[in-house]
Image (cartoon, rainbow, N blue to C red; front, side, top):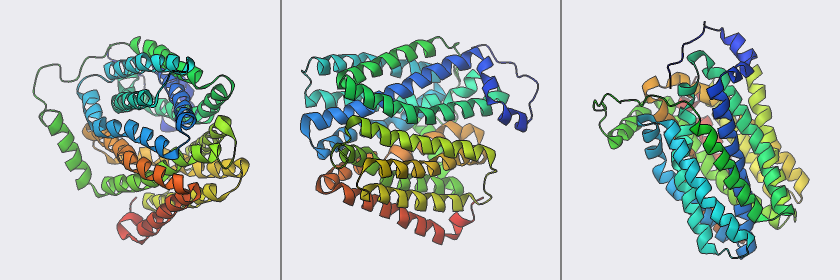
Length: 420
Protein backbone atom coordinates (compact mmCIF):
# COMPACT_ATOMS: atom_id res chain seq x y z
CA UNK A 1 0.00 0.00 0.00
CA UNK A 2 1.29 3.46 -0.79
CA UNK A 3 2.29 5.41 2.28
CA UNK A 4 -0.55 7.62 3.39
CA UNK A 5 0.31 11.31 3.66
CA UNK A 6 -1.20 12.74 6.83
CA UNK A 7 -3.49 15.68 6.34
CA UNK A 8 -3.14 18.78 8.54
CA UNK A 9 -3.70 17.81 12.14
CA UNK A 10 -7.25 17.92 13.38
CA UNK A 11 -8.13 18.82 16.92
CA UNK A 12 -9.41 15.90 19.05
CA UNK A 13 -12.70 17.71 19.53
CA UNK A 14 -13.24 18.09 15.80
CA UNK A 15 -12.36 14.46 15.21
CA UNK A 16 -14.83 13.27 17.81
CA UNK A 17 -17.63 15.41 16.36
CA UNK A 18 -17.19 14.14 12.82
CA UNK A 19 -16.23 10.45 12.84
CA UNK A 20 -18.04 9.86 9.54
CA UNK A 21 -15.36 11.83 7.66
CA UNK A 22 -13.25 8.67 7.66
CA UNK A 23 -15.58 7.30 4.96
CA UNK A 24 -13.84 9.67 2.53
CA UNK A 25 -11.05 7.09 2.53
CA UNK A 26 -11.62 4.43 -0.13
CA UNK A 27 -9.53 1.77 1.68
CA UNK A 28 -11.49 2.37 4.89
CA UNK A 29 -14.77 1.88 3.06
CA UNK A 30 -13.52 -1.47 1.79
CA UNK A 31 -12.39 -2.47 5.29
CA UNK A 32 -15.67 -1.36 6.86
CA UNK A 33 -17.81 -3.27 4.37
CA UNK A 34 -15.67 -6.41 4.64
CA UNK A 35 -15.62 -6.48 8.43
CA UNK A 36 -19.33 -5.65 8.67
CA UNK A 37 -20.16 -8.58 6.42
CA UNK A 38 -18.02 -10.84 8.59
CA UNK A 39 -19.87 -9.71 11.72
CA UNK A 40 -23.24 -10.53 10.21
CA UNK A 41 -21.91 -13.89 9.05
CA UNK A 42 -20.80 -14.65 12.61
CA UNK A 43 -24.28 -14.07 13.99
CA UNK A 44 -25.96 -16.09 11.27
CA UNK A 45 -23.80 -19.06 12.20
CA UNK A 46 -24.08 -18.50 15.95
CA UNK A 47 -27.87 -18.69 15.96
CA UNK A 48 -27.92 -21.48 13.34
CA UNK A 49 -25.31 -23.57 15.15
CA UNK A 50 -27.07 -23.33 18.51
CA UNK A 51 -30.42 -24.20 16.97
CA UNK A 52 -29.05 -27.03 14.85
CA UNK A 53 -27.41 -28.74 17.83
CA UNK A 54 -30.56 -28.43 19.92
CA UNK A 55 -32.66 -29.80 17.05
CA UNK A 56 -30.33 -32.76 16.52
CA UNK A 57 -29.78 -33.64 20.18
CA UNK A 58 -32.08 -31.62 22.43
CA UNK A 59 -29.15 -31.40 24.83
CA UNK A 60 -27.55 -28.36 26.42
CA UNK A 61 -24.54 -30.56 27.16
CA UNK A 62 -24.09 -31.24 23.44
CA UNK A 63 -24.31 -27.52 22.70
CA UNK A 64 -21.70 -26.86 25.35
CA UNK A 65 -19.31 -29.42 23.86
CA UNK A 66 -19.70 -27.94 20.36
CA UNK A 67 -18.83 -24.52 21.74
CA UNK A 68 -15.82 -26.03 23.53
CA UNK A 69 -14.61 -27.61 20.29
CA UNK A 70 -14.86 -24.21 18.62
CA UNK A 71 -13.30 -22.24 21.45
CA UNK A 72 -10.32 -24.49 22.13
CA UNK A 73 -8.34 -23.95 18.89
CA UNK A 74 -9.26 -20.27 18.96
CA UNK A 75 -7.76 -19.92 22.45
CA UNK A 76 -4.67 -22.00 21.69
CA UNK A 77 -3.84 -20.18 18.45
CA UNK A 78 -4.90 -16.63 19.33
CA UNK A 79 -1.43 -15.38 20.29
CA UNK A 80 0.07 -17.03 17.21
CA UNK A 81 -2.51 -15.27 15.07
CA UNK A 82 -1.70 -11.92 16.65
CA UNK A 83 2.05 -12.37 16.24
CA UNK A 84 1.65 -13.40 12.59
CA UNK A 85 -0.61 -10.47 11.84
CA UNK A 86 2.08 -8.12 13.19
CA UNK A 87 4.98 -9.96 11.60
CA UNK A 88 3.43 -10.65 8.19
CA UNK A 89 0.28 -8.91 6.95
CA UNK A 90 -3.10 -8.34 8.63
CA UNK A 91 -4.72 -8.09 5.19
CA UNK A 92 -3.32 -11.43 4.02
CA UNK A 93 -4.33 -13.07 7.31
CA UNK A 94 -7.89 -11.75 7.01
CA UNK A 95 -8.21 -12.80 3.36
CA UNK A 96 -7.02 -16.33 4.10
CA UNK A 97 -9.24 -16.86 7.13
CA UNK A 98 -12.35 -15.39 5.48
CA UNK A 99 -11.85 -17.49 2.37
CA UNK A 100 -11.48 -20.68 4.41
CA UNK A 101 -14.59 -19.84 6.41
CA UNK A 102 -16.70 -19.50 3.26
CA UNK A 103 -15.26 -22.66 1.68
CA UNK A 104 -16.06 -24.82 4.71
CA UNK A 105 -19.45 -23.35 5.68
CA UNK A 106 -21.01 -23.71 2.21
CA UNK A 107 -20.92 -27.56 2.26
CA UNK A 108 -22.38 -27.55 5.79
CA UNK A 109 -25.28 -25.42 4.55
CA UNK A 110 -25.90 -27.94 1.76
CA UNK A 111 -25.86 -30.86 4.21
CA UNK A 112 -28.38 -29.13 6.47
CA UNK A 113 -30.64 -28.16 3.57
CA UNK A 114 -30.71 -31.73 2.31
CA UNK A 115 -31.31 -33.16 5.78
CA UNK A 116 -28.11 -35.24 5.79
CA UNK A 117 -26.09 -33.41 8.44
CA UNK A 118 -24.66 -35.42 11.34
CA UNK A 119 -23.20 -34.30 14.64
CA UNK A 120 -19.64 -35.25 13.71
CA UNK A 121 -19.85 -32.77 10.84
CA UNK A 122 -21.07 -30.10 13.23
CA UNK A 123 -18.06 -30.76 15.46
CA UNK A 124 -15.71 -30.60 12.47
CA UNK A 125 -17.02 -27.23 11.30
CA UNK A 126 -16.79 -25.92 14.87
CA UNK A 127 -13.05 -26.72 14.81
CA UNK A 128 -12.70 -24.82 11.54
CA UNK A 129 -14.54 -21.83 13.02
CA UNK A 130 -12.15 -21.78 15.97
CA UNK A 131 -9.03 -21.94 13.82
CA UNK A 132 -10.02 -19.18 11.40
CA UNK A 133 -11.21 -16.96 14.28
CA UNK A 134 -7.80 -17.26 15.96
CA UNK A 135 -6.13 -15.68 12.94
CA UNK A 136 -8.91 -13.35 11.78
CA UNK A 137 -9.63 -11.54 15.04
CA UNK A 138 -6.11 -10.21 15.84
CA UNK A 139 -5.66 -9.21 12.20
CA UNK A 140 -8.96 -7.32 12.18
CA UNK A 141 -7.98 -5.32 15.26
CA UNK A 142 -4.49 -4.48 13.97
CA UNK A 143 -5.18 -3.57 10.33
CA UNK A 144 -6.68 -0.10 10.78
CA UNK A 145 -3.35 1.81 11.17
CA UNK A 146 -2.29 0.34 7.82
CA UNK A 147 -5.48 1.53 6.12
CA UNK A 148 -5.97 5.11 7.34
CA UNK A 149 -3.74 8.04 8.22
CA UNK A 150 -2.78 8.62 11.83
CA UNK A 151 -5.29 11.40 12.44
CA UNK A 152 -8.09 9.10 11.22
CA UNK A 153 -7.47 6.36 13.78
CA UNK A 154 -9.93 7.77 16.33
CA UNK A 155 -12.85 8.25 13.92
CA UNK A 156 -12.06 4.93 12.24
CA UNK A 157 -12.12 3.07 15.55
CA UNK A 158 -15.32 4.86 16.55
CA UNK A 159 -17.11 3.83 13.34
CA UNK A 160 -15.95 0.21 13.61
CA UNK A 161 -16.96 0.03 17.27
CA UNK A 162 -20.47 1.38 16.68
CA UNK A 163 -20.85 -0.90 13.65
CA UNK A 164 -19.85 -3.87 15.78
CA UNK A 165 -22.44 -3.00 18.40
CA UNK A 166 -25.09 -2.45 15.73
CA UNK A 167 -24.35 -5.90 14.34
CA UNK A 168 -24.99 -7.36 17.79
CA UNK A 169 -28.44 -5.74 17.66
CA UNK A 170 -29.42 -6.59 14.10
CA UNK A 171 -27.39 -9.72 13.34
CA UNK A 172 -28.93 -12.12 15.89
CA UNK A 173 -32.44 -10.89 15.11
CA UNK A 174 -31.97 -11.45 11.37
CA UNK A 175 -30.28 -14.78 12.04
CA UNK A 176 -33.13 -15.86 14.28
CA UNK A 177 -35.72 -14.84 11.73
CA UNK A 178 -33.91 -16.68 8.92
CA UNK A 179 -33.77 -19.83 11.06
CA UNK A 180 -37.43 -19.50 12.06
CA UNK A 181 -38.75 -18.75 8.55
CA UNK A 182 -36.41 -20.67 6.25
CA UNK A 183 -34.43 -23.07 8.44
CA UNK A 184 -30.89 -23.45 9.75
CA UNK A 185 -29.51 -24.44 6.35
CA UNK A 186 -30.27 -21.05 4.83
CA UNK A 187 -28.72 -19.31 7.84
CA UNK A 188 -25.46 -21.19 7.23
CA UNK A 189 -25.76 -20.28 3.54
CA UNK A 190 -26.04 -16.64 4.61
CA UNK A 191 -22.88 -17.05 6.69
CA UNK A 192 -20.99 -18.41 3.67
CA UNK A 193 -22.27 -15.62 1.44
CA UNK A 194 -21.29 -12.89 3.92
CA UNK A 195 -17.73 -14.20 4.25
CA UNK A 196 -17.36 -14.75 0.51
CA UNK A 197 -18.38 -11.15 -0.21
CA UNK A 198 -16.28 -9.84 2.67
CA UNK A 199 -13.30 -11.78 1.29
CA UNK A 200 -13.58 -9.82 -1.96
CA UNK A 201 -13.68 -6.42 -0.24
CA UNK A 202 -10.63 -7.17 1.92
CA UNK A 203 -8.83 -8.61 -1.12
CA UNK A 204 -9.41 -5.27 -2.90
CA UNK A 205 -7.57 -3.38 -0.16
CA UNK A 206 -4.26 -1.91 -1.34
CA UNK A 207 -1.33 -4.16 -0.47
CA UNK A 208 0.84 -2.80 2.33
CA UNK A 209 4.57 -3.35 2.48
CA UNK A 210 5.33 -6.21 4.84
CA UNK A 211 6.90 -5.21 8.14
CA UNK A 212 10.41 -6.55 8.53
CA UNK A 213 10.85 -7.13 4.79
CA UNK A 214 14.50 -6.04 4.99
CA UNK A 215 15.42 -9.54 6.18
CA UNK A 216 16.79 -8.42 9.54
CA UNK A 217 16.03 -10.69 12.47
CA UNK A 218 13.32 -9.53 14.81
CA UNK A 219 14.80 -8.19 18.10
CA UNK A 220 12.70 -10.67 20.07
CA UNK A 221 13.60 -13.62 17.85
CA UNK A 222 10.96 -15.82 16.27
CA UNK A 223 7.24 -15.97 17.00
CA UNK A 224 7.88 -17.64 20.33
CA UNK A 225 10.26 -14.88 21.36
CA UNK A 226 7.78 -12.18 20.36
CA UNK A 227 4.97 -13.81 22.31
CA UNK A 228 7.19 -14.28 25.39
CA UNK A 229 8.31 -10.64 25.25
CA UNK A 230 4.67 -9.55 25.16
CA UNK A 231 3.85 -11.62 28.21
CA UNK A 232 6.82 -10.19 30.14
CA UNK A 233 5.80 -6.66 29.29
CA UNK A 234 2.15 -7.13 30.27
CA UNK A 235 2.98 -8.86 33.56
CA UNK A 236 5.48 -6.16 34.55
CA UNK A 237 2.86 -3.42 34.08
CA UNK A 238 0.56 -3.69 37.07
CA UNK A 239 -2.33 -1.83 35.44
CA UNK A 240 -2.34 -4.07 32.37
CA UNK A 241 -1.91 -7.16 34.55
CA UNK A 242 -4.89 -6.33 36.74
CA UNK A 243 -7.02 -5.51 33.71
CA UNK A 244 -6.22 -8.81 32.03
CA UNK A 245 -7.07 -10.78 35.17
CA UNK A 246 -10.37 -8.91 35.58
CA UNK A 247 -11.28 -9.56 31.93
CA UNK A 248 -10.57 -13.27 32.36
CA UNK A 249 -12.81 -13.54 35.44
CA UNK A 250 -15.67 -11.51 33.92
CA UNK A 251 -15.75 -13.43 30.66
CA UNK A 252 -15.34 -16.82 32.32
CA UNK A 253 -18.51 -16.16 34.30
CA UNK A 254 -20.52 -14.40 31.61
CA UNK A 255 -19.63 -16.41 28.49
CA UNK A 256 -21.00 -19.69 29.76
CA UNK A 257 -24.26 -18.19 30.97
CA UNK A 258 -24.84 -16.29 27.74
CA UNK A 259 -23.40 -18.80 25.28
CA UNK A 260 -25.06 -21.93 26.73
CA UNK A 261 -27.73 -20.56 29.07
CA UNK A 262 -29.50 -18.18 26.71
CA UNK A 263 -30.24 -20.73 23.96
CA UNK A 264 -31.41 -23.14 26.66
CA UNK A 265 -33.80 -20.57 28.16
CA UNK A 266 -35.12 -19.48 24.75
CA UNK A 267 -35.67 -23.09 23.68
CA UNK A 268 -37.13 -24.29 26.99
CA UNK A 269 -38.53 -21.94 29.61
CA UNK A 270 -39.46 -19.06 27.31
CA UNK A 271 -40.67 -21.22 24.41
CA UNK A 272 -39.63 -18.38 22.11
CA UNK A 273 -37.66 -20.34 19.52
CA UNK A 274 -34.76 -19.03 17.48
CA UNK A 275 -36.48 -15.65 17.18
CA UNK A 276 -36.47 -15.32 20.96
CA UNK A 277 -32.76 -16.08 21.11
CA UNK A 278 -32.16 -13.39 18.52
CA UNK A 279 -34.22 -10.92 20.54
CA UNK A 280 -32.22 -11.62 23.70
CA UNK A 281 -28.89 -11.17 21.94
CA UNK A 282 -30.20 -8.11 20.12
CA UNK A 283 -31.30 -6.55 23.42
CA UNK A 284 -27.76 -6.96 24.74
CA UNK A 285 -26.50 -5.21 21.60
CA UNK A 286 -28.93 -2.31 22.05
CA UNK A 287 -27.68 -1.78 25.58
CA UNK A 288 -24.03 -2.02 24.56
CA UNK A 289 -24.55 0.48 21.73
CA UNK A 290 -26.28 2.92 24.07
CA UNK A 291 -23.45 2.55 26.56
CA UNK A 292 -20.77 3.11 23.92
CA UNK A 293 -22.53 6.17 22.50
CA UNK A 294 -23.13 7.59 25.96
CA UNK A 295 -19.48 7.15 26.87
CA UNK A 296 -18.55 9.19 23.82
CA UNK A 297 -20.26 12.25 25.33
CA UNK A 298 -19.09 11.83 28.94
CA UNK A 299 -15.45 12.23 30.06
CA UNK A 300 -13.78 9.04 31.22
CA UNK A 301 -13.85 8.53 35.01
CA UNK A 302 -10.65 9.41 36.82
CA UNK A 303 -10.60 6.07 38.64
CA UNK A 304 -10.53 3.33 36.03
CA UNK A 305 -10.21 0.70 38.76
CA UNK A 306 -13.56 1.62 40.25
CA UNK A 307 -15.11 1.28 36.80
CA UNK A 308 -14.01 -2.37 36.82
CA UNK A 309 -15.65 -2.84 40.23
CA UNK A 310 -18.94 -1.30 39.07
CA UNK A 311 -18.96 -3.36 35.85
CA UNK A 312 -18.61 -6.62 37.78
CA UNK A 313 -21.48 -5.71 40.10
CA UNK A 314 -23.67 -4.44 37.25
CA UNK A 315 -23.21 -7.59 35.16
CA UNK A 316 -23.54 -9.90 38.15
CA UNK A 317 -26.94 -8.55 39.15
CA UNK A 318 -28.15 -8.49 35.54
CA UNK A 319 -27.14 -12.09 34.81
CA UNK A 320 -28.77 -13.39 37.97
CA UNK A 321 -31.94 -11.54 37.01
CA UNK A 322 -32.01 -13.07 33.51
CA UNK A 323 -31.81 -16.53 35.03
CA UNK A 324 -34.69 -15.88 37.44
CA UNK A 325 -37.32 -14.15 35.30
CA UNK A 326 -40.11 -16.34 33.86
CA UNK A 327 -40.61 -14.87 30.37
CA UNK A 328 -38.86 -13.38 27.36
CA UNK A 329 -39.70 -9.67 27.73
CA UNK A 330 -38.24 -9.06 31.21
CA UNK A 331 -35.22 -11.18 30.27
CA UNK A 332 -34.66 -8.99 27.19
CA UNK A 333 -34.96 -5.83 29.31
CA UNK A 334 -32.36 -7.14 31.75
CA UNK A 335 -30.08 -8.12 28.87
CA UNK A 336 -30.31 -4.58 27.50
CA UNK A 337 -29.54 -3.03 30.90
CA UNK A 338 -26.57 -5.34 31.40
CA UNK A 339 -25.26 -4.54 27.92
CA UNK A 340 -25.02 -0.84 28.80
CA UNK A 341 -22.19 -1.63 31.19
CA UNK A 342 -20.18 -3.49 28.58
CA UNK A 343 -20.56 -0.67 26.06
CA UNK A 344 -19.33 1.91 28.54
CA UNK A 345 -16.33 -0.11 29.71
CA UNK A 346 -15.32 -1.20 26.20
CA UNK A 347 -15.21 2.43 25.09
CA UNK A 348 -13.23 3.70 28.08
CA UNK A 349 -11.17 0.55 28.55
CA UNK A 350 -9.78 0.37 25.02
CA UNK A 351 -8.65 3.99 25.19
CA UNK A 352 -7.14 3.41 28.63
CA UNK A 353 -5.13 0.40 27.43
CA UNK A 354 -3.98 2.18 24.27
CA UNK A 355 -2.67 5.12 26.29
CA UNK A 356 -0.93 2.85 28.80
CA UNK A 357 0.66 0.41 26.34
CA UNK A 358 3.99 0.92 24.57
CA UNK A 359 3.20 1.34 20.84
CA UNK A 360 5.63 -1.46 20.01
CA UNK A 361 3.54 -3.83 22.16
CA UNK A 362 0.06 -2.78 21.04
CA UNK A 363 -0.64 -5.82 18.88
CA UNK A 364 0.56 -8.35 21.42
CA UNK A 365 -1.22 -6.70 24.33
CA UNK A 366 -4.47 -6.62 22.36
CA UNK A 367 -3.98 -10.31 21.54
CA UNK A 368 -3.62 -10.97 25.26
CA UNK A 369 -6.80 -9.03 25.92
CA UNK A 370 -8.62 -11.33 23.50
CA UNK A 371 -6.95 -14.37 25.04
CA UNK A 372 -8.03 -13.29 28.52
CA UNK A 373 -11.55 -12.83 27.19
CA UNK A 374 -11.73 -16.12 25.27
CA UNK A 375 -8.99 -18.37 26.62
CA UNK A 376 -11.13 -19.97 29.32
CA UNK A 377 -14.25 -20.35 27.19
CA UNK A 378 -13.63 -24.06 26.45
CA UNK A 379 -13.73 -24.76 30.18
CA UNK A 380 -16.66 -22.47 30.92
CA UNK A 381 -18.70 -23.89 28.02
CA UNK A 382 -18.04 -27.45 29.17
CA UNK A 383 -18.99 -26.68 32.77
CA UNK A 384 -21.97 -24.57 31.72
CA UNK A 385 -23.35 -27.36 29.56
CA UNK A 386 -23.30 -29.72 32.56
CA UNK A 387 -24.90 -27.17 34.90
CA UNK A 388 -27.53 -26.07 32.35
CA UNK A 389 -28.61 -29.68 31.90
CA UNK A 390 -29.31 -29.74 35.64
CA UNK A 391 -30.86 -26.27 35.88
CA UNK A 392 -30.46 -23.18 33.65
CA UNK A 393 -31.42 -21.02 36.64
CA UNK A 394 -28.53 -22.47 38.65
CA UNK A 395 -26.13 -21.64 35.82
CA UNK A 396 -27.14 -17.97 35.79
CA UNK A 397 -27.05 -17.69 39.59
CA UNK A 398 -23.56 -19.20 39.76
CA UNK A 399 -22.27 -16.96 36.97
CA UNK A 400 -23.77 -13.82 38.50
CA UNK A 401 -22.50 -14.78 41.93
CA UNK A 402 -18.95 -15.11 40.57
CA UNK A 403 -19.18 -11.59 39.17
CA UNK A 404 -20.44 -10.20 42.45
CA UNK A 405 -17.54 -11.88 44.25
CA UNK A 406 -15.18 -10.35 41.69
CA UNK A 407 -16.69 -6.93 42.39
CA UNK A 408 -16.18 -7.40 46.12
CA UNK A 409 -12.62 -8.64 45.66
CA UNK A 410 -11.55 -5.85 43.34
CA UNK A 411 -13.20 -3.23 45.56
CA UNK A 412 -11.20 -4.56 48.51
CA UNK A 413 -7.90 -4.16 46.59
CA UNK A 414 -6.18 -0.83 47.03
CA UNK A 415 -4.20 -1.52 43.86
CA UNK A 416 -7.35 -1.82 41.79
CA UNK A 417 -9.09 1.14 43.40
CA UNK A 418 -6.05 3.35 42.72
CA UNK A 419 -5.83 2.60 38.99
CA UNK A 420 -6.20 5.84 37.04
